[in-house]
Length: 43
Image (tube, rainbow, N blue to C red; front, side, top):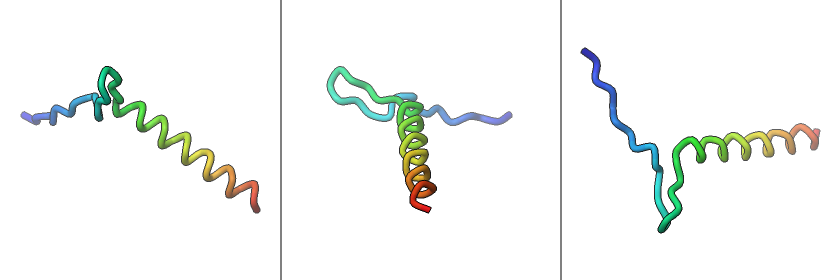
């Protein structure tokens, strides 16, 4: 039987604010979108 790793959904907490992994992935995707868009506009 396969065992799945238990990964905490919260990446880190700053006081009462907790940042989750999916929020970081949304941020990474948005940053990549902006950077690639700027590169295409510059061409």
